[in-house]
Image (cartoon, rainbow, N blue to C red; front, side, top):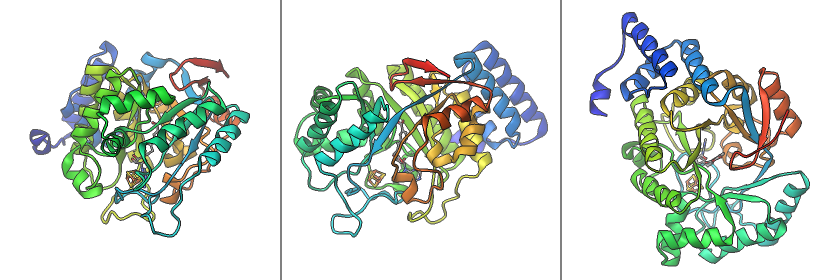
Length: 373
Ligand code: V47
Ligand code: SF4
């Protein structure tokens, strides 16, 4: 990345050539380089970047935009990590800390089934006291409510923590989770994989290298996962390109990633002085460049909770082909000031997609198509 940091891109001639080169690459299906991705980040021609990304997406996914009917369950906000960007987590004795009982989790799963959900997405902290058995019991409890519910839960961060808690190897932890009903993994915990930024925003979290290693083992065990990038805090464009490169390299090796989700940093109640925040232009540019760079990812998701509904809809013209789900109850983004709604009805998502001139397709977690609208 040293060379990238020195080679800044300026001059109209250079930019024109860059866009021509990338256009040819989109048409011929050739991979763009790190330097080209960095050039795009430094360009202000948002519409040209968006058009290229939209074309790359059309070639992969046509007119379809996916969504699913899901429900988040935030089972505990107690967390030993206390990442500085996280407004959700609490220490054990802090007011506002909570842990759901298994019966409360079952009740939320029952509500989800009544609302037609096909997926439960759990997000929670690394609880200081619960044993690995609690997490296994949580999976079994949800499966007992409805065996057909797909459970998308835990990330490399939790898998590593469970291994320490239980004394089991990573492979044994994954095996036990699978047997208890785990269906796939969400993309969290990746943040920015480069260690210099990670040391500033989440010094207690596993390293970027470890996140990649554990994710590789998850894929080797036959589970699919997503990947995220938390952007708009202290990272620069070079850090973003490095993050994308590490993900593209791992995807070349395993093919286990389903979708990439850039997460726009929400600053309220967080502890990241100097964070730059995410405007609409940066959000759209980042989604579009992700589509162009990650040629081996089928899906790029606009997570409307962090982006807001209007930017998420506009993102459909910038290379995005997935809008996540109905969500129902969300704490990570909303504790940090996200002003999006808590939930979206299926009809609302369909309308948002159709008004962008696209075909709305309800999918399950593994992207099997259920119905088109
Ligand atoms: O890893 C924490 C992020 C992630 C903030 O895979 C924040 O389908 C913005 O990964 N501002 C957890 N983001 C959520 C997550 C996710 C969400 C939706 C869909 C999927 C998927 C995955 O939330 C964390 C962290 O990167 N996060 N705090 C914040 N203040
Ligand atoms: Fe804990 Fe996750 Fe919040 Fe970090 S982002 S403090 S690991 S809940």
